[in-house]
Image (cartoon, rainbow, N blue to C red; front, side):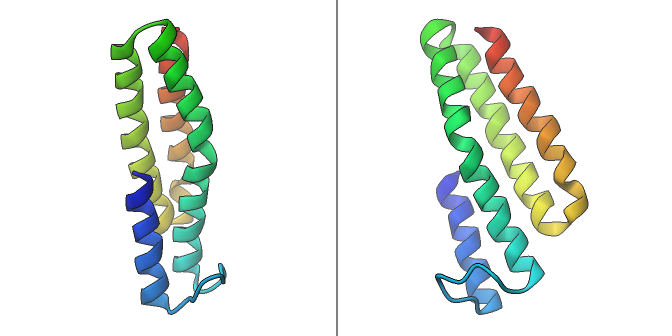
Length: 105
């Protein structure tokens, strides 16, 4: 997932002619870049929760939570890139997947 989202940022850089290391440009590029950064920032918390659930409770529950997280992140990324108003979906989906894994422990 991380590689796919990074590729989307790269394609957005090319499309909007934003050369690295610059992170400012047209609003469409900035939304793509920020959506990727938000995903990167949440990834360590997700991994710790996933591993804890897998080790101490159930690998099946951890796999279910992981799948929910990946789907939620993809929906969030696409919504964030398209519109600023769809960001609240991230909070709902992420909290559901993390709560699912956490309560499974």
